[in-house]
Image (cartoon, rainbow, N blue to C red):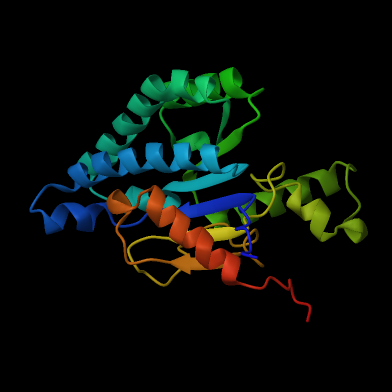
Length: 236
């Protein structure tokens, strides 16, 4: 009897390769980002159909502010377009939308659109789509430590009682289970400051496929490989 593929509860993706995709075609980098947005839609829809409960996409890191100003401006415009154009689709497909990361550096109009979309979709139950925006895992951990120190000073927390579970509740992902599968496109063999705490026992899958070329069939390949793994979580 053929073993049925188990669908990961939570898939996280480092969406890498937009710039290289454009360069291969002698196009400006922004064309790669535009094409990458199509992959976001396709993979989100595929996850809904497969029954994935959580999908986290690494959209913009704390280090990405070092990129050319025109590229950053375009990425923020692309995000605004996504929030405007996809809101109805998110509601129609029962998708909950959530952003993790430090919002302080984002423009006020973008924060407003994020908050509106989160509020409109907060009761949706099919898939939780999490966008990591101005996100850096080291920044997240430092922020958590500072919040813990503040609560100790205010008497809300006893330092001797701090455990993994308590620490986890100070992270951006406090209400989200850890990823079962982390996919990185474009073949780069690094984590890039993404969900360092959360992926302690996550299965890693790296593909040379560039993000704009990553489609539903590629997602299925990753899930197939995931099913070949034996997850022991440190045990035998």
